[in-house]
Length: 308
Image 1 (tube, helix red, strand yellow):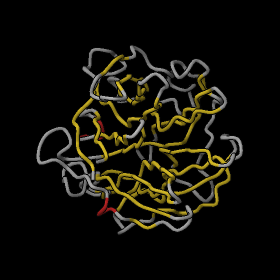
Image 2 (cartoon, one colour):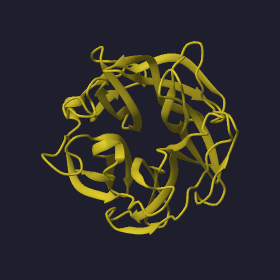
Image 3 (spheres, rainbow, N blue to C red):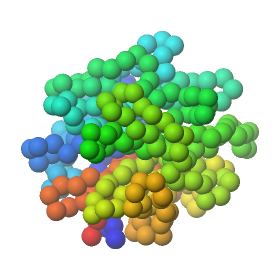
């Protein structure tokens, strides 16, 4: 069961690089009783950049610090992230922080292209540098449409990634819409990934899209949270918009969707009454938090719920 605790943060529009949205909350639990939450915001050209706030780990609605600049600029002209940089997860490894992020390009035949990039911090996550100008996961012959929103953990020296892989673009009501589900990859160094094109969470129906996974492995069970929606009318119909889902697996091979057990749903009114999207689960002491976006893909900001 999850207990909603309310909205934490949204941008106020006063900064030119942060006019709207606080999207894809990506928390990192620090050692000093703080949680740093990276998020994507948008400028007046609707391009995403990443910054962060820090909140009390005991009371995440208490904002202790708001960063006043992006942690990464747009990528070099022509590169995979020259139109947007959106966080997805932070991995703490060898005294550094590895930020896996989503790069954005605008396109002509469809609205955008997505790939997965890597940036590394050596100052505890305040500033980052790109590991490469190019992505660590790109479109391939088996995944020709998009790859985006990864979650990475390290187990027994194996880097494990669950990510969103596109299966096609469709024209729906005159707009190009991507369809995507959840896949899995492995690495020995966090950079070079083996991608068996393995689907871990398939579609429930032909008009579904599934994205932004986060995985916890405990007591012999893999637990995954993600968001899912329809590809038609999801911007205006709350039943077709983003909801948070849940799945389990004993071995990270055979997954079973158990969306009915997620324990949280849209509010009757307010900031998360039309949409709940992009969940991220973290533990602090004896507590487990779920951070998520509400209406408008983060236009209404992000908040959290407490596992009870």
